[in-house]
Image 1 (cartoon, rainbow, N blue to C red):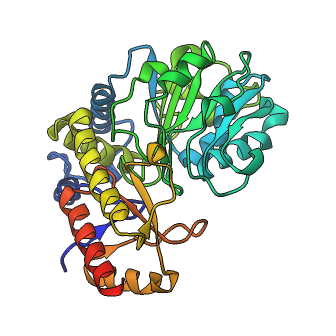
Image 2 (image 1 turned 90 degrees about the vertical axis):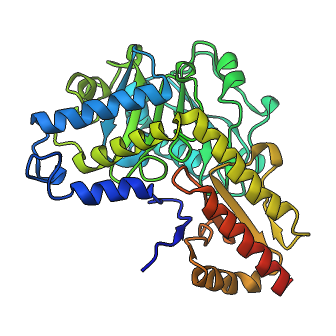
Image 3 (image 1 turned 180 degrees about the horizontal axis):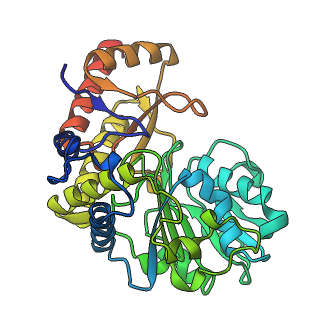
Length: 374
């Protein structure tokens, strides 16, 4: 059976070269006679794996030395509450809401507010500032009201469901926030573009979109933000304790770290993040051009300057054709194109592992489908 073009938003496609290497090393990792899934996380073999993975990630993102890299569990969703519990120390924190994931982040922060501190809505693109759905753009400067005394300012830099992405690496926002640390959920576009890590206090990302398998979340934390956790914080959720123990207070997600490390090595072979960013620009431009030049047969609702390179939602002019589109796409080897249940329509997630050939195949199909059904 031939492999399909997988446009899933997550768990998402992995580079075929990485999957092949995982297959080849499954029973015997580098001559040790066992699988990575079987080896002790305290042994020298796994120490090599996790140390190499961290070193490669630091190289790819140019992570400064005064930042800790943590390999955690629980996904980005757990960090929605874990971050205020670690950073707020009873103070208020600011939240910007531009889609479902930043909306969930502030909702989770409010659940732990009695322990961590208040979660304040500093700006939202939902109707009248309510935590509602219907996000199609980023916040404008005049819509953002920051508290200069906030413990941190949280945002999601790429909203997977709505396809809204911060385009300027938060340069203006970081300058405006001043001494207030930026905390960024980069789950669905980390490693797809260059990032100035020094602008952020915390960067975190679930692995299952652009890094590796599900079950792992990366967290890059500036050292001066460690040690602020509430006194009742469980040890396993305390960033400082995790940093002091090399992410190994308990058994870490060893297989996820191993595969992610292979993805980091694959990215380096592609030329690194800068080279991958150029590929991603070409892929996104190709797909958006197809949508915009369809004469209204396809539509993307997001403002042009807020469009995501990673997640491209679109609708058909005639929704009665949705099921036909998905069925014919599947027959053509193009899968996981159904939009999120929140917004409907279609969505193509074109992460690093999706080659240009896959986007070309999708665009060719879309044009032919519009020609037949338009």
